[in-house]
View 1: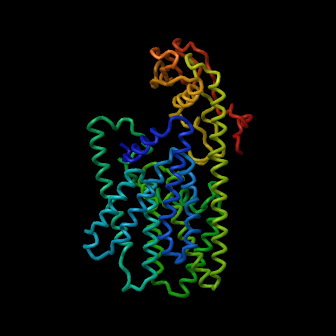
View 2 (view 1 turned 180 degrees about the vertical axis):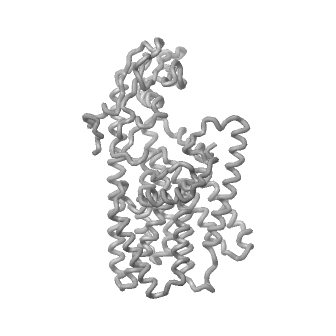
View 3 (view 1 turned 30 degrees about the vertical axis):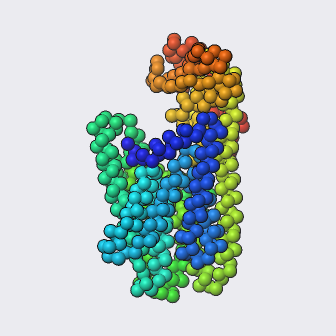
Length: 479
């Protein structure tokens, strides 16, 4: 219903891999392998603007350590991003091999293969499929460096493939919407992620785009944006355009700036069309790399014009040091550490809960500021996601059952078993010593203690964000 059938497929496959918390490590490992593969595939693309494989390697490392890819490899929930990015690269690869030969190029098999793979990417996760557009931008830059008579119009073909894909995707969304409405499936669709409602306030959306997602992307690897890097990049852009004006005049400059503006919008297109303002870092998979490529081109142009080309390699080496180190520190401090703290806390909480006894879990402090939060991606806890409150006991009871040699025969949840704010999680256990018997236990999950129904008469276990180790007097652990 959200126009993401590929997400359902990937999450289903993940469910087969994940039986406990250790399974999430495998999901993240697979994401890391896919991101490395994407970085390798992009080397030939970066060769087009660097003309040098070592520099392409440095640029690839800098690109794939940006925050979008930090999230992709450190959060199992974002395991849809890497395959989407790979599909986008394949789409751009087929588009690159199709010259714009009037209408014949648009009728070639490679053109429609590009459309097919880009469509599959959008049907998986449209917000990450925009990685396609930085690659098309590279084709545009390559065309501008050639004489007019040698240009093959590959970026026009790639652009046409992208636009055709969005048209087909829109038709598919219409069909899904019609089918969902006809079968009464549209009722539970969250408005935040509703692809069937399109933003029409373009001016407000573009202003927001430059205030938040664009500003975030200008900060490159820094997830706590400030004005330092944006001002520095603005000075670099001003210097580059000034040198270009002195050497080439102003005739072609408006077209270059205009096309760059178009590519910036295309690299965030799905979120610009959404009615909600969604600036998540996982949605910067196109915008972040595009800004890094533009920065590379501008800086390279300035230093070559001044005859300081050797200094550019030094700057690239500085970038390859800053990028991975920042990514490592960010992932550790704002992804791995909160997860470790929370996992140890829950393990301790469930250690003394008998498998065959009913328990009431009371959650509180869920609206407390998580540690150094950046959207729902950095510094957040599972307790911040209200939809996961009933799944937490399922996960840790599985771990406990494995230690005590019990087998989980069946598990289920019910919403509003006695009151709307209550969820019931029931377990059916088996034990090798009693092969024909099944033992049932139930965990009641609530977010309040007053006016509890009389049916909940079991012991209560209090779980709160403020009980996590390192949090004192309501202060986040990482600040």
